[in-house]
Amino acid sequence: MNAMEVETSNSASASLPSRPKFGALRAHEMSDGQVQFRKVSVPPHRYTPLKKAWLEIYNPIYEQMKIDVRMNLKDRKVELKTRADTPDVSNLQKCADFVHAFMLGFDVTDAIALLRVDELYVESFEIKDVKTLKGDHKSRAIGRLSGKGGKTKFAIENSTRTRIVIADSKIHILGSCTNIKVARSSLCSLILGSPAGKVYSKLRAVTARLAERF
Image (cartoon, rainbow, N blue to C red; front, side, top):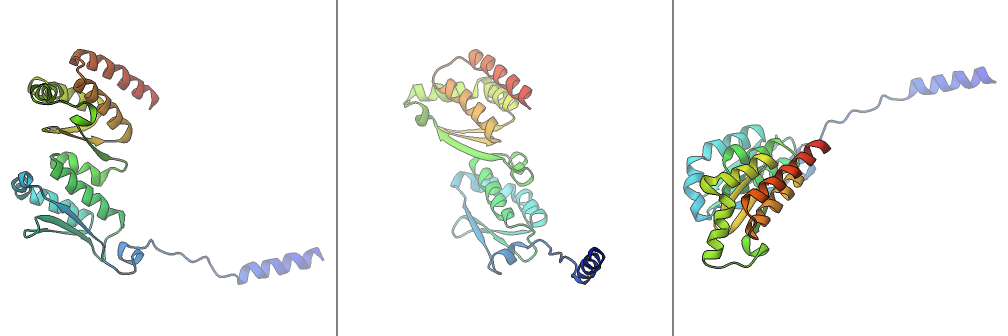
């Protein structure tokens, strides 16, 4: 009886078809062949820098990410869309984030990290979100954030591995979630009036703790 069972099981396994192997779906297949769009507005003060850096922005988007890109001169918007050979549907959003980061004031060399590294974000806030300042008080707060010749800003960037853009009263931070949190905490302390030396020492302690954790 046992021998008969073994024979029938062997014959059953031999008759089973091989497991099918399906390739990964492309972007246009996932959306039933529909083209997906993103539009990024170009502010007036970023129009000239965009013209100068257009090829640096265009090449990685078109050649590496396989996304179509064009500048709509009438609407003053950068338009992005998927195409038949786009490998991943998330590439469209990555490219939109990359262009948006450039519009906020980040260099192309820094913003391009959004295409190559996952879990990078841009966070924006204003000085008035932390403390309501007007006139000279606001100007002094912006001066504290930058430091002499940008020294304070560079120190925060290097220790937290982030990139910071200070555009008048708006502050934009590019980096990972944890690093953005540390950088934002330091910037908020400076806005609230802490001296740069105190912020540096606190920053050294926090970055040392983060280094130990990883």
